[in-house]
Image 1 (tube, rainbow, N blue to C red):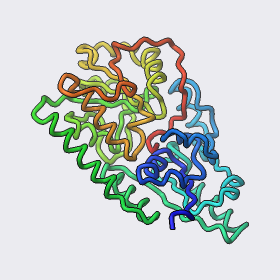
Image 2: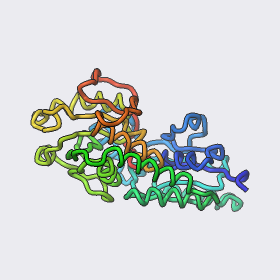
Image 3: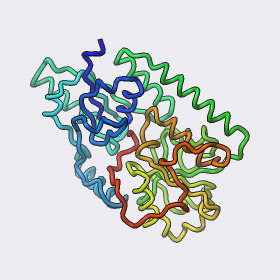
Length: 328
């Protein structure tokens, strides 16, 4: 039965869900940001941003704001390529128009496909997770649509969660602020506060299940975080390091933060981990536990995070990506 499936994933987290379910060989197309697992980069690219994803966080923010101000979609869908690929299923999202191609754009593309060729009737699977529980529910929904058993993947989640929490039981709980965007300043909401809590921390400045809020420096100072974790949308580790060193750490209130005074500021590859609501959120949980309790846990994610004090960067870094990471 599975031999007839032709899958297109329009967001990286969906590609990772498909991989986790053992169906990556059935992918025939991807979004411009799908890059995991290795090998999917060779698939045809079905979407593209309508703005330049290069530059500082402030420059990217300004470009996206201008696109939205003009009532335009942030991303485009390659309708002709969809027609050529003839998908049986298209997986997209309906949470955030900045994160990935919007559901309305995909629905319009599917309607156009069916209008020109009634034999094309792909099933649309739209993901909209806000809480961790909804991430696991989305995995079950994708599995159900593809006639698969999600339990091996979900049982692995339970095992790893139990192992992590067992390792940190009884250790002090730091107050943690997670930074999802640098200029303007935004903290990480949705599933991130839950990950912080499960990893042993106390999240500040964001609520589980709610969209990431814009904040001011006064808010950050008042929160007095013991730990500061940078995970900007769509930025890899080198880009995050450059941005923090070039702008954030130069702010006059920087030295007042408890996390800075104690040397507990950390940079992460937010694009690969925290911003993608899929199976690798378990990796993200383990990364946070390593950050909070480095002397008690083995470090298994050396390429995913680093203390700011270990960072040697210039004002220019490679790896510019688009800001839409909340659903990646």
